[in-house]
Length: 417
Image (cartoon, rainbow, N blue to C red; front, top):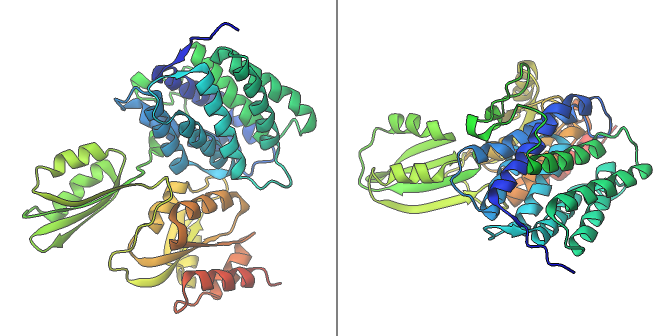
């Protein structure tokens, strides 16, 4: 067998991801009209991809391992809806397979792609098996044989697509999940070849959507790094410093600490923040946490033992939830699901030591479960089918009990007829 010496670079990876985003720009409306992946799955997958491609616009890292990790981090944090969560996990597995590599051979990339399929399968219940997973398994098998044959990456992707097409005989052809898998692979292949059908994506021009009515991906920019540090011997103007830090963060808190200040913020540009902070005074206790990975962060001076967190689709529902006793409100609806990052950011506040997150729609479930995976024991879930069940659950909340005990009682109350 002739050895395939093809090398996949960071630039190749950028084109593949951009090609996938471009393909979803063309197809998301058709995906929205299909069943099987909740409300408006095309919109949710497009916004997840928008979050995933944003780090590629400014990064100076040109290694395929570094780029894939940045994309995975952004996708996991920006994932919306069931389809978005599954796609984000595919990126996560892909980044694990490419970790530490500057370039990758076709074989290494193909194996990393199979790894991505395995990660995607883990977040979806095995039974009944969803069409997106049935197709994904077939795709992984096709890619496996192509990798074993030492084929170029374009032929590996083509073999994966053909294997997936053959599997459609076992699933519903009009299922959104199956269509999403094909659009993703087709987009990656077109991007790698440079055959963009849509003029919508241009990394050099800032990834502007360029089409009226489309979501601007800059609105889905995520800030997944939690940075905490102390600046000693400084007399900075705290309100002015907070305003300045918010230019590069979604959350910024500065508090006086002895002769200095304590800083806590969420950003996508850790380097810029630290570079500026060095000029404010000596730094101490610097901690950087990637919030898209499982982590434990204790609350600093929490005001409450446990707080309730829920999603409101409008001001009326938000007011009703507040009156019922919910402490933290996240904006979202079935048509515009909250992202994993929005849930994690809300639970990162120091309002409470722990949170009970309440979901009233099945479309939110995978995002809530992903938030739980990332935050661990600081969060407990109560997963309801509708707003009526959620209302019964909220009534059962007891602020004197811990989060785990509340979640058990509230889940039971929600299911009572």
